[in-house]
Every structure is written in C-alpha cells, then in structure tokens.
Image (tube, rainbow over all chains, first blue to last red; front, side, top):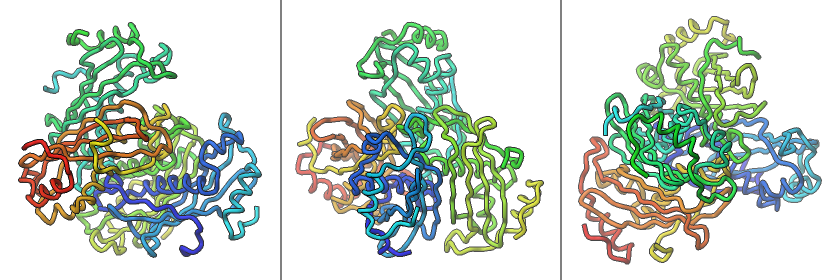
Length: 145
Length: 145
Length: 145
Length: 145
C-alpha cells in the first residue's frame, strides 16, 4: 500500500477530546475519521451523502469495519485520510482507507457498506449512476464484481 | 447544595474514551452524563423519554446548559449524578444536576429545556400530566412558575 | 456463535448521544462498547485495567479491531456485550466480542491487543500471572498459542 | 452580540456522528466545538496549546462552561466558531464564543479557565507574555481585571 494508490485524501486535525490518557487517539475514533472522509469522498464524486442516495431511493448501512493500527496519532496531528472504493458488488461497496501523518502510514482499514432501502433496510442494487460516478472518479480499475 | 437535595441519582462509571491527556474527563462529556441521568429521571417518574412526551405531542429541546467544575473525575471513577427539576414554567423546565464521587461534589450544573412541538420546534405548554408526575416525584416544593 | 460461548457479559444501555440521524447507534461507538466491556472483563478476572498491567511493567495497545454489523441497536436498548479471550500469543491477546439484545445477535467483532512496554510501546511477553488469570477464568480451552 | 465582535473564527463542518435522532447536533458536542476553536485561537495568537503554556509552567483547566442554544445545527452544516477573550483575571480567563451558520447566530457561550500548576492544579497567575499576546491580538479593549 502507498499514498499513490489514493486519488482522494481528506485532511483533518486530531482534537483534544479524541486523545486518551495514553496520549493517543482512542481506537474507536478512527471510525469517525473514516466516516468523515467518506462523506467528503461522496461529495468529491458528485454524490453528496445522504441526499444523492436518498434521491435514488436508497441509503448505505455499514456491514463490516476493520481497522489496523500501525502507529498512534496524537493531539494536534494533521492527518490525511485516503479513501478509495475497492469493489462494487450488486448491493455492496467496499471502501479501503489509509491514514497518514506526512508519509508515515498510521492506520489502514476497510468499510463495507450495503446499499439498502432506507425504510426496510433490505439490500437493493447500487444505482447505475453511482457506479458510474465512482468508476469515473477512480482512474484505477476496480476489482471486478 | 448537598446530596440530600436530590431524591434521584443515576450511577455511572467513567469510560476510558471519556478521559483526556490530562487524565481527567473531557469537559464536554459531563453534558452527556447529564443527558444520560435525565433520561433515567424521565423513566423514574413514569415519563420515559421520548415516547411519553411524543404521545402528548411534544418533545424537549435544550435551551441552555451550564456546568461548573469543582474537581475532576478520572478513569473508572463511579459517579452519582443527582437530578431534580427546580422549576417548571409554562413551556420550559429547569433541571439542576450535581455529580458526586462518594460525598465529594465534583460538578454542578443546570439544563433548561423548552417543551416544543416536535415538527415546528415552537414552544408549547408543558403537559399537565407531566407537571403532576414531576410534582408527585419531587417531594420538595418546586419554585413557583 | 452463541451466547453460551461467553462466560462474561457486560450490560449497558444505549445513550441518546450515541444514536445518529438514521435512528441507530453510530458504527464507531461499538468500539467504545467493546472497550467498556473489556475493562469490566479485566476487573472480573482480577486484573483491573490499567493498574494491574502497569504493576507488571506493561500496557496494552490495540493492534486490530473488526466489527461486523448484523442488526442495529437503537436508543435506550439494553445490550449485553459478551467478552472472551480467544487466544494468547507471546505478546498479543485476541478478544472475541458479541453484542446481544436479548437473544438477538446484533454485533460481533474482535480486538487484538499487543502487550507492550508503556514507554517504548515495544512488544513484551504477556505476564505469566495474567495468562493464568485468563486461563482460570475461561473454562473453555483457549486456542493454542 | 454580532459577528463583528470577533476577530477570530474557526470554521468546521458538522460530522454525521455528532447529529442525533432529532436530526440536530447533540447539545454536548458544542463544547467540543468550543474546545477545537479555542485550540486554534491559541495557535493564532502564537501560544499553541498546551506546549506554550507548559513552557511557562502552567496549564488551563475549565472552571465553568455555559451554552445557550438559539437554533440547531444539522449534518454537514459549515459553522463558524467565533472566539475572543473577554476578561483576564489574575489566574483566570473568560472566553466568549458564538457559533454562526452564515449570518445566523446558532449558539453562544462562555468558557472560564483557571490557569494552574499542571501537577497540583492550584491556580497560578496568567503569564505576562500570554496576557500581552492576547492583548495584542484582541484590538478591542479587554474588560478590566
């Protein structure tokens, strides 16, 4: 893995309230960082969350999250959260994320979303226009569905 | 102020994620503690939030919050959050809260809610049955409205 | 997987501040629930965190976290967080966690800790007394290291 | 009060995890916003927190916080958090904060810090150089101490 694999990065600065007694970011907050960066990714590809999805009659729900911790971030660190879509299935999307402080990889992880009906939460196909927007944005080839 | 002023206490234990690099609970989290304890207060008086309020066509919104910090709480501390209603106005309710570790007063504060229409967020009168439930629960006389 | 696999459960109630606009617990908060329950697990086996570890000259750092979301929890739900140690390596420990609402499995996940020197954060062997305390507590056989 | 009273603003965007089931930012999170903006204020006046304070042998602890809620912020809103120091006492500092969405005032509040010895948490005088840095930054006259 390397920074070059990501077209999209969202910068953010670690908040005081996010750092614990060990002087490092509490492990769960990286999922908030992932979420914040994915929101910006949706905006970057022209599908602002959640309105653009709701317009297509769907919403996303997290099905699986994984975080690997290589090195800790501390208070006031400026981090770059890399986001890319690694795979689009019929009704699921797998995001790959990496968090850097400069060139140092601190965190890597993935978020698998299921695309679903907002009311019933039953899986529905990923809209074609979303599939296209992601494909257009990500120059690199997606893994085949 | 003293512990005896409160009929209702909710106990909770400080979480690791709530403690910052100074080794003390981050100042904002006490508003979460207040909120958790008030939820239990609603349950104790037989008006579980938010369903009992919604049944009466209203909901509460925070209008003002104040926190005074006398001594810090640390990781794993068991705290008692005292809650009482100090005043019921036409459409507002003032809660007084104090947080103790044993007999030591750590935090005191107040939360002023406005009772409002859930859709328009415009103030509506506090339902009579809620007024009665609070009055019955709080033995001590409420400040006059 | 089933509730019977866990000797240890920690009950907790979902807080208002933990529920998002979808009406469900924000995905990252389950890592806080895991953390809270593991703290109680340490207490249950007689190794209260972090003092008992620090006494042995070590501390734990999260190396990997995984969460699988089967069904969402909502406001005021009472959850049981099951915790067990599935494997103890030379300097790592793998915790398996499952969150239930009654008999319904909502969440499963794992947390891998590395046991490390608090100052250098370099891995050190899991203390023998901790290994024994876990072994004694967990009746079921641990996976071999 | 008005936007013009503030020389310093910090912009931030509301995160998904900060919005509750009512579709609005949970009341306690505004204290996190205050804290984030005050950190940036320290940076702006050339006293980055906490290092510049620690160099002078002191740290700040929150003594009192007040928040008044005029209108709610929602997901993805871009907010401007205005910060100014309204008063410097012998060992205390009173910050006044206002949060705007465009020209609309949503939130106002204050944070009173005590300047203290990091170890004993006993009040110590605000360092002269900090007093000067704030005075230089704030064109408007401070309330007399």
